[in-house]
Every structure is written in structure tokens, then in C-alpha cells.
Length: 199
Image 1 (cartoon, rainbow, N blue to C red):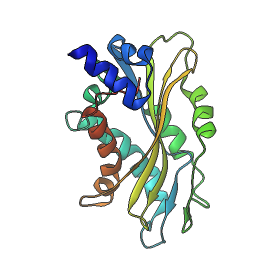
Image 2: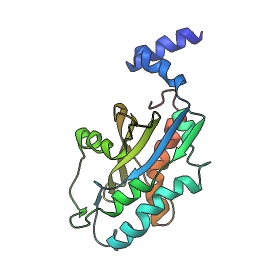
Image 3: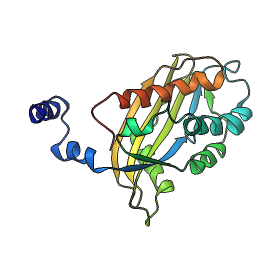
Image 4: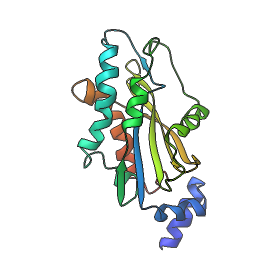
């Protein structure tokens, strides 16, 4: 029965046998966090009223929330691994170096996949044979009430991309931090409930 279910899964998703088998081969990921270095805020100045505060406070706070509430933001379940190591300082530093001029706009914005893969070099280490995972934040969109982001997993030693996918999720909750954090929480929750893991 399990074999039939596996081949049915392959047939309807197009995922390869190798990719499915590799899901059980991964024991650990390194979570590199949320990179806001390319993000744009879609809305108006009263909705994102203090851009410097967002850069200095919230880019760090959104990253640290996953560490502080690791049971809620269940990366082990999302990626199907037994261990998660956290290394978010690079993402925080890159995000806080973001030039805030032009970050707020009212028109649509899209990051290309090539831009995401081009960022991986900042997270590689030839001496590390583990798998890295990173969320590249695209938009916090108050007009459309959505969060868009790219999730990428990769070989840390080489930068070879294993999986890349763009997500569109709804924000929600009380307070500026929690409202936008709901977007990446939904990504993690949906991955946890999915039989296909992004490795």
C-alpha cells in the first residue's frame, strides 16, 4: 500500500523518485533565517510609518521569533528532519544593511528566481556539508493583505540549490510584528502538514 501511495504521489506531483527518496536521507538543516535585503513594503506611509525602526528592530525581531517560539514555528516538522541548527546573524546583518530609500511603494514588486539563487553565495561554506534553508522575503503587502517570500534549500558547501519555491500567504494577528510574522508562520505550518518536504 505504501509503495502504491508513493507512486501515486510521484504521478500527481511530477517529483522524481530520487527526490522522494532523499526526503528520508536528511537528518539536519541549518536555518539561516529571513533575509530582508531585497524586500519591498507595498502600501502607504501611515502603514509603514517608521522605516528606520523596522530596519533596526523588526528585521531582527522577526528572525528571533522563530528561535524564541521554536515549538510554534516547527522547522523540524516543516523540513522533516531530527535536528535544526540556527545561524540567523548573517540574514539579520544583511537585512539591517538594506537601503530604506525606495523600500516603500504602492505598485507591485517581484523578485526573480535568479536573484534568490544569486544570494546563496553569502551563506555558503566549503567546510560545511550540511543543508541550509533560507527565506528570502519579497513583499509585505498591505494593499493586497499578503506576504510573499521565496524558500530555498541548498548544499552549504557548494551553494547547489536543492529546492526553491515562491509562497504567497496571508498576514494576521495583533501588533505589527505578529501581523507580518503570520505570513512565514503559515508557510512553516503548511510545510509541516505536507508529505513533500523542501529538501
